[in-house]
Length: 454
Image (cartoon, rainbow, N blue to C red; front, side, top):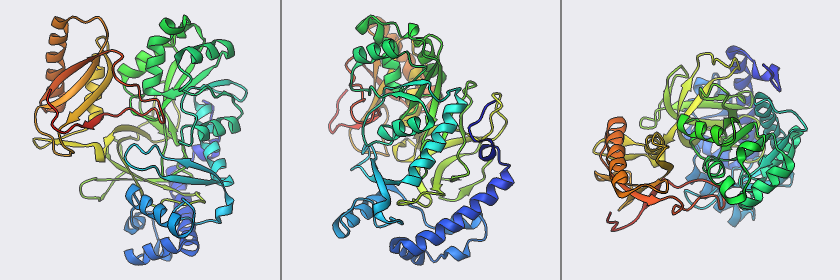
């Protein structure tokens, strides 16, 4: 088992906790001294950096979320003439890269990176690359976006810092161009979104005459949207690329992305960055902490321990994860996480909590007849949704009306069995769903259509 930084990645839990507490103390004192915004935020919450005696006590410090970040950045644009937010805690002239969020849940927010911030992100990327069996000099085809989004140019930057030979073809080049470039450069690894990886595997040979199975690609790294840890999805991707291994990559807005990667055992995403990232698990309803133990499930809270520009303390990513602490069969260290859904996407159907991602998981179990693309359509904004819930499913081409009728009833039954709510399945034929690879590659699972009638 090869690791990029064994000393950091193999720290015992006790040593790790001591390091995290030390770094948290330093971080709290720094932002209190350098950021009037944080100084006032601590006063309002009735906490002081000097009071931090243990990691448990950190739970008394206030959360940070996307709405607060937007307000902070709007204020800094108006008052200070920059988009980094009032919570910036470094000299703005040290910022040498600006990244942007996707903006899929509102107006985009901006993240500034200093040289140190970029170096930590590159360190984390290198840890993931080595765990996948990549070496400096290996060719990587970057078929994701080429933009300010953190999975765009920042990822290219980090992979180059590792020493990879990066081919930044981007996703907007189209299937034919990507196939041609892959055929010429013979990459060992391709990096893209889940939906675009599936799209390439399914359409490349027909559109370009180049069989993705014959490209010699050994690793397919997917990121940006859930699905890379679902058996029906990663198996389809691996088969489509001729037996390549599919790896699911995980980022963290409050930390230095990436922070984890799955393994060949597909038993969750190994978190390998706990020396520069502290996370908590809370109950999203009560906001109370949950123990970090095997099987616990809740909302994850991130704090980047070494971030210079605009650190986000106790950042609510709004993601629900399940924790696995038992040893993985791959032998690699690190607590593992499995993405379960998003707090702000959750629907309430007759008292039942429904995550759109879970609906897509059920649909993906019918991968021989569906593409996996779905859209939940609501007549009004959630979280309360009336039963039955309309779910548009994209089916593969060539299915007869009779087969669609059988498939629809089977999907409705499976959704009710696994998720305990009633659905109404509607179909679109393959190719009519817009592939969301434009700016971010993220697929939209819920859409509000007033007066929608099936």
